[in-house]
Amino acid sequence: MNVCPVCGSRRVVRSRTRLGLESVRRRLTTRRPYRCFNCKWRGWVDEAGQVTPLGDASDVPPELVAQDAVLEDSSKKAGR
Image (cartoon, rainbow, N blue to C red; front, side, top):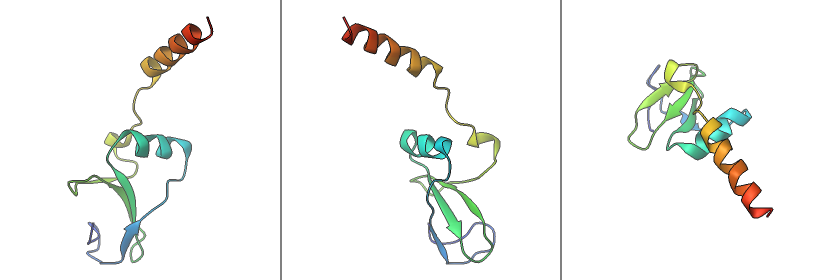
């Protein structure tokens, strides 16, 4: 990402993840957090350059209940 989608500044850099949910999202998707030093905008950008502002409706973390069930089953089988 070369230009801020809000102010047009070129002072945009990759940002670190803040919370556990952001870390999970970073691992499960191709989106990465970016920050603008000029206007303080912070959002997610995917490999194609599409922007998702933080707090957007599409910023909901993935449903992990099914994955938890699979992990529990595999740990029970490994314990036999």
